[in-house]
Image 1 (tube, one colour):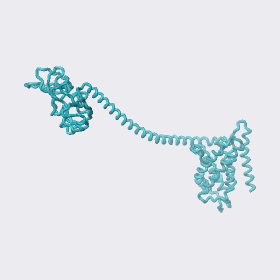
Image 2 (image 1 turned 90 degrees about the vertical axis):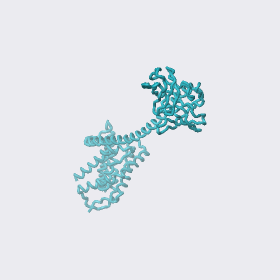
Image 3 (image 1 turned 90 degrees about the horizontal axis):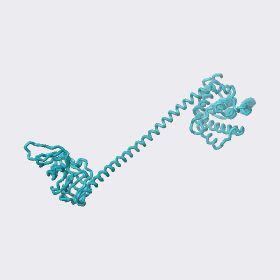
Image 4 (image 1 turned 30 degrees about the vertical axis):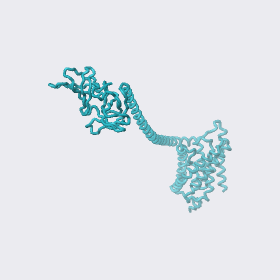
Length: 271
Length: 175
């Protein structure tokens, strides 16, 4: 017990001496030769461990950053998808607005009352060029009412229900329209071929038909008002011995991509 | 004897370096104290003198490395090492939870003693609430690491084949 007390006293005095010795030193803290030796010996080890810890810390930060980046990336992808959908929807709306504006502008020049209709169906066999629109007899649509788009004639109403109508396109083989060539003022008939082009018939051989010449309705068929664009002459066909010359006509309206049309509910052909 | 001293010194220095380089980076406000655990294990296994000596050496090393005024931790670790050695006859280290429980008590004692020392010497103004929170964290981590450190000290004993005839170590008389 006595030995312990002596040891404890010596050690405590040593520590206390260390503590108080610094107060007397001008720089307040001097580690002395032993302390310098210990610090010198431990310095490289501590440096190495600190570097290792730094490396581990960097790796860990990188790892956590990768995790955060994954989350961020997923969030941004979702945002991009959402914005893409929004852009697509807005672009769709903008295009629809442009089409409707053109349709409305075209409507200003049309005789009588016209109702706008949206194309809601199309013959899936493509044997018949018929579309279905969302306007019917409830809206004043009647059979044989002319149907137009902003670019020109589309066709005529084939059948009517209270809420929908079937429209026979001018490209259908059952379709025939009285037309005149805008430049030569030659009257003719345009009928459907069952595909994208029309056939211009009954033009006297003596008349010159120019490719690109506009073909408009003549108003003589009893259905279409006069002066509506039907199409432009694509190619002129000269057959040996034929009484008339013929031509192929490209429809003015893009009949394969119709989305909105106007139905002239009280058009009078003679106007 | 020489080998044992060298191994214990190596443990102390390694503990000090690891404390300073690694454990001080833990983002908890406080970290485990390997030096204290070595002092505690030696004190509990070797008794008063060994505890006191290794305590003052460990405190001195910590003073050197931490940049604190020399002697603050030397005095504090000396007190803890001496207390651990004095308590060793009453501590049964065969019980599994004993190193962790001892570490809890020793950590709190060290915090109290070192805070008293710096307060008395006027080195710093101690925030006791902060000290309590930091000490609780350090005590919990020390309790976790006390077992492995105690096993290391026991291994050093076994390697150096040191036998203390008739000395009481944790209620056990080795011979």
